[in-house]
Length: 106
Image (cartoon, helix red, strand yellow):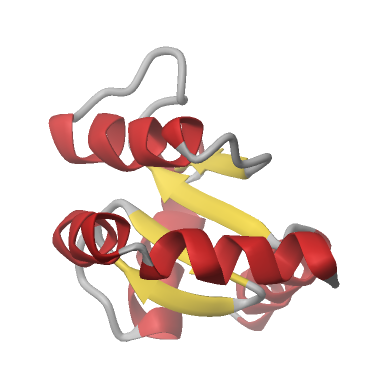
């Protein structure tokens, strides 16, 4: 299990904006993942993604790691932002754009 947690940590450290999702941004496999990927694209955000269907071990470990039971999970600068509902709220309020702008300035 610690190997998986180490992998998660490395992924988060390597990518300022990371989306753990079902499918890929071009071929999302659930509406919530599609919506969050769409938000990031609308903000012209460079982001990495991990298709959790390709890594069942990571999919289970990430739930414990983040204390967040569902997908997608959006991380900015290694911190969990949340899932689809929270990402939508932050997008609509402009806060998500601010968080992402901070990663570009860093």
